[in-house]
Length: 458
Image 1 (cartoon, rainbow, N blue to C red):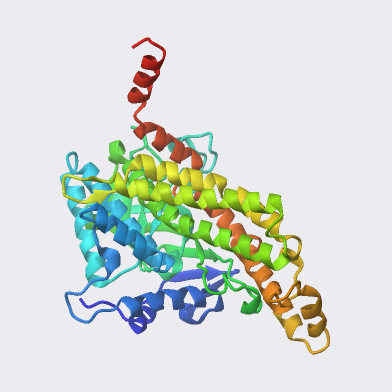
Image 2: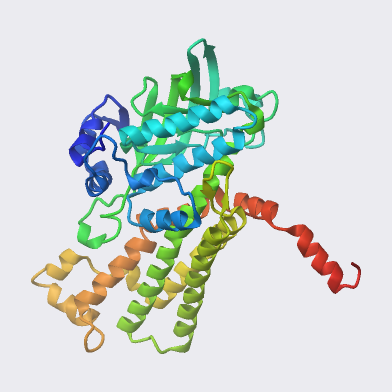
């Protein structure tokens, strides 16, 4: 089939999917204000990448066959919308899982590869549904008071399985085409029904998605970042959803129940670090601009904070480049980024992000939150006074400085900023998971050997 255009994508959303927002079911998704920016952004992506011809496919379906391919994909994903990025990362995670499962379950690996080709052939967008409700965190999945708080198989049929549960924190689920369900953690023998991975169309019977959003409700001039970059957050309800066998990638094979989460974590953390490298440079730029606008750029503690932010941005990018430089091939010839450097870089960038935001807020000052709105600037009576008193020095007008404050607030200190702050830590599985993987792939034997040599105990 041919690649989709913007109009094709918009038409594809009218497929009977059950979407809810702010207590009501959304009947016209393409024109609902809460989803408008996200849908427009995805539509732009379809239009920009569209190539005519039945054999054409988007660059987001490219499988890296070298370190250079990996770098190209990372460079490109910074230009893609969130759903396209999620599609690329998620499908690469599935192929990574297939490579790791092939020796034990060749038939499941083949299903994954066939599903990859299906998405590529139909130019579909996918999200990964991984985080369960989890209930009482002290209790194993099978011992919960309510067994459905971890997504599970409730029926096995000759032609497929039926699953029940919920998946939380699933960005852009409502505006994509496919939900790739994965186990949220390693399942043990006796928890076979919870070791389930599969692909479900968003409009499948039994699927309902409840949405929240950090999209601004006020004038977009006061929200220069989030008005252009926002996605709905989905709470996915899976109410006895049937999945045919060809879309089932795991159905009780507990030995590989963590394979999907680990594979997804690798690609999400790599992509997350790529975005955080860009965010780090933006934080540095905002800090320098507001210091210059305030006339404080030469004050020693301001210079030191910006220097620390520069080091943060540089080290984050260095970790990203090391993850690519140390990439390794799979038996199939696909290249995967280094587990060690990817996890170490993502952990560092996420753990230190809040400190960099604190530096920016300290440099900027209270007007980050209290600067009058753009509508006030435009008011005939008070606007001239705002411009007068928000100005600082030659070349720094009151309007410029006010709008700079709005950008800092929107990016770091409002709904979008709060979303970023939490997402930086939680995306890709949280800091603890990244420490575990980094420790697992670190050459501890070498470190011990060097220490023994240093101590004269070799």
